[in-house]
Structure formats: structure tokens, C-alpha cells
Image (cartoon, rainbow, N blue to C red; front, side, top):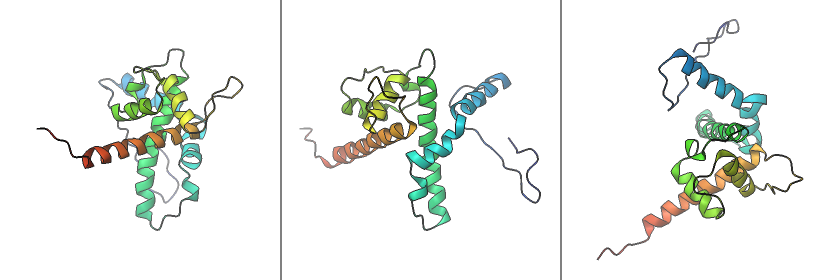
Length: 173
């Protein structure tokens, strides 16, 4: 999709949308775009990058480093925004549609009470609790920053588990 009416003297921005959802009609494509627009409400992407990924406090030494960080952090923020959006629906869908098997496995290792087939709301709350959310009845809804901190914890665990599994000799005899 190409930007309409770019500022004078500037090239139009070209947006590409990657999805694993089946898209065979214009209506299906518009449904996906609408879902993403809804999930990015209220500056969610920039708020996630600022508060959840602490982009403003990082001291990058090059444009290349900033671009690498943004490519990874944006994907992670989008994933948590989509999870939050799904958690807020009347019937939250399965977290398996949003998180990888490895992410869900690491989360269940840290949260023993989380059901194997947890929905988006249960998963969002579990991640937010890992990120410092208390989840008391008097607390407001889980914050995006807490969920981002929680997914960071699970990703660190996944990396540690992979590293440990590769370094532990296994006797197959």
C-alpha cells in the first residue's frame, strides 16, 4: 500500500503487511487490516516501544542498531497488542493462535496454573503477572508494559532452556 499525498519533497511511504492468515478476497484483506488498526489503538505501538521496550533509554551507536532493534521490538509489541486485543473480546481466542509453541511452553513452566489450552485473556494476565502486575480485584486491567516484560522473561527462559539442552550430554546407549 502506497501513502497517499506524501509531504512535499518526500517519497511516499510503502506499507507491506505480512500475515499467515489465508487471504483470498479483498474483504479478507480488509478484515485483517481493520483488526490490526483496532489493535494499535491509542498509539499502542509507540507506547509499547517506549514503556515496554524502553526504546528512549537505549543508547544505540548507529542507525543499523536502531533499525535492528526496531524490527525485533515492533514484532514483539505487535504480538502483545494482538494478544491484548483478543483478550478484550467477548470470547477470547486461543493463545496458540498468537504465541509460538515455545513461548507457551516457557510460560507454562513459569505459571503452573496456566491451562495447556489457555485463551488470550488467561495468557495476557499470566504474562503481565510475570512482568509485575498483581492481578488483584482492585487493580485495573493488565498493562501492555507488564505483558511485554512477561514475554521478555519467557523468551529469556526459552533461550536458557535451549542453551542448556544443547550443552547437556545425553547418553543414548
